[in-house]
Length: 545
Image (cartoon, rainbow, N blue to C red; front, side):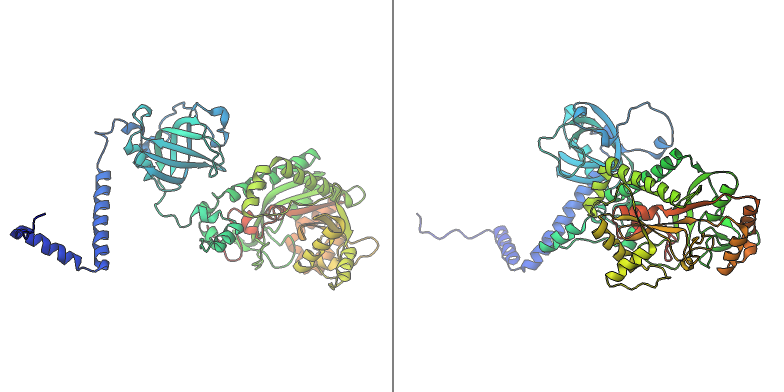
């Protein structure tokens, strides 16, 4: 090994060495800053390159892209066959399908591979893009898919295949090997609420907290402010399908019992329930209000010769009740019928109606109930094949024995109702029961008094899980007593003169009931707020959206 000293560096080498020494003296902070700048510059260059038209260089450019608006303005009928995402199963393997859905999740794996999860209603499927000339998929097509914004509406053509491992993130246990992908409508890049956040259960938050993670919690008001997004969560999709089934079974059962569906006015001249909780307005210069119920008109229909009638329609209550179970507008399910001998005939209709609804939901809506249960866990409703009936006095006595004093001639408050519900469940093993023979002082003016004690009435309430869902009764069908009771309740008889007069033409004994659709769904699914079962709720604080 030579012991001679190394040759002196050239001028250029000396400058390079000086630069290296200078760089070495820079702080680590400065070096990181310079590195970030370089990274940003590189990404900007990549984005610019991606934005350059690639049609000329991509032989498969026709297999993907944004569809121009004019192409989806009902321009033509192609005759193509569309598949429902929820119908895709093992039997579809190997078949070419065409689907449309919202891009729920987008996951790039590499430049040549990506996953897109499409959602349609309550169903999701994983679509796989792999750059391959034989499949007509280019790297540009993969890049196009990964650049889609979440919730954009997308059409996919591809071949159904079976995954090697079970899929945890989708409802359908198949994949679609994408051949074509088109964006029909792009969602904004950043949504006001994240669907994944809105779909989390309380258990998810507890698990994250134990792991030291913090998840975003979407509050009730935020959900309602952006309801069009919130409605897309699996639980909301399930809730309103359950609601549809309740309404359908209500109609179906009553039609089978010879009821006739009717429609009554929602603009009326006077209060239909008594009291001041009405929305007042001018009707061509005349004072009017929105109907609190179809009560007066369904009774007039009975007077008109219809033995049994029902109505499904909006009900308006101007009550300043900011509670978990009150709305200013809700869907009323109302019925009225002739009584031959006893108002228990009405109770028997309710018994059969609701038992049939409960059984139908339990047997035919398992998917929807399981979906709700994942986000909002609840115990199945307990009910008897023959609905339990207790007198109001028996209910008050049960509360008294449990340490809760109730005014004998007063009404039950929310706390007392819930406690009575717990007591009934413990003693009779049911969440569904009827409480009848209420005091006259707490019932509407048109309620028939009891024959043996006029301080009580031929009336009833029906409860689910300790909350009232139905009020009903035998009605007064004699005009004299009706006018007397209206006056005693502070109602101006002149505003309901047509109603009272209709009973002077001959009216049969009759009774009926009314129930809020949203409240039935809320309590059957043990949800904690009625706003969860109203698609666009109206409460004292909310008029939009």
